[in-house]
Length: 343
Image (cartoon, rainbow, N blue to C red; front, side, top):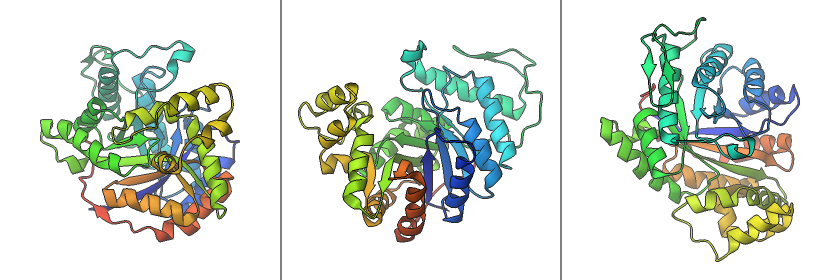
């Protein structure tokens, strides 16, 4: 049995030193996991993660998520190995197919094959398996091995996925599955059923794969101001994730109107179109009591981890402070069943 974890997801857009300060504050306030996003055109996540590793002692650290199209699997292996060494065994590896790579001219063929083979290559390298590997997309010639020692051969694997096929793959090979951009308790049962299809295929229990939900978070004692900021943030990705949630019925033409305003640079106007009930499915927002109630609903639904994403508050530091001092004490983190170690 393991207690439900509470994490912070950070955007990599800060100055050197900011990450260490936020990480120390988060660890002191009781957070369990610090994630850095790997979004297009932001700082590479390894820089903030290494800074945070040096500033902390306890929290787990990882990227959500690297992708095997813009970074080769052997480079991914090197980055997770470096983070695991710097953090003395606190790293996890996040993999996903990636989003918006077309704008930099990168195609994404056969994403499920790419993810499964990338994970195979990464963990063969971390284990020191030099027997070679011949996949459909990736290969290792016999004798190919890392030329440096690694801290652990099996840091946990997280897959980012919403759909049935991605979740089934997580059921076969991952320790966790992250549904990014969702705060919807109804998605937990959906994802669990999708994971089960893959887990049972290889004789795993569905509970061996932890479900992680994370989304934009804006908490403040001024609840309306926090929710207004969250609406603006959610508008930028609502069109990407809303149609992935089979439990949501969207008002007619809402996504088209939101996307039109976002494309025109009118993010606040786009956010004002998002009704309260829809906002609560795709963001944590409002007063500490409101945000805690949303997180508790996910815990009650059976997640293994809740991840509060950027911008956290009206300012990052104020948001982290309120999440730690006013939200975490309100949460009942019931233990969930799990099996330690990678599949």
